[in-house]
Length: 244
Image (cartoon, rainbow, N blue to C red; front, side, top):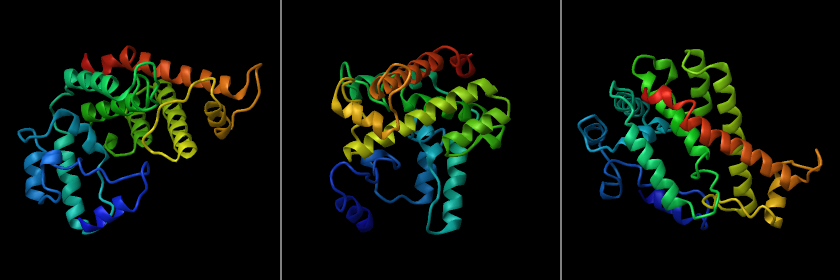
């Protein structure tokens, strides 16, 4: 715990921090948990909330005791990939809350606005949960690799996988560029279209003059196209895969 705290304190405001809320019982839970308590919380009858089933997909062991790491990953799989269906109401409610509470009126947050990165991640995770209990090939923490696995297993068509892949890669590049421009990992709100900051962002992403439009206008078109597609497609075209 001293190592975690020193890591957090050594970072200036805005850079990445270790999120200590992602533990059993959240902010009310102990900072360190035994495997027994981890298993007690992350199971169908434990205290874990529906959204934590999605969050745990990203969990992976990166160091320390490899046996313990394997046991934790086994516990993850047992909790995430059991036979219970995706909780559609909870999924919809969570997205509404995120958009209402984390996105200011009139602003576009590349992660949390409708059509943002998290919509694609949640959709892919929902498919992993839906099919992962019986097909372990679609399990895994990496979103792009999961798309490929879902495609190979026949749960995403080539067209669907291609559209998801392109939108996801574009939004990741956009988020990374925003972080580089601002030196801040948290502020993912797009600058005003007409601002110098937006023009600088466009140039940072490699946009230049072309097709009768400047760098900023070309970036804006790509943002509109990718986010509008994601918002529309993930709520209409693909939703039947989850809740039919």
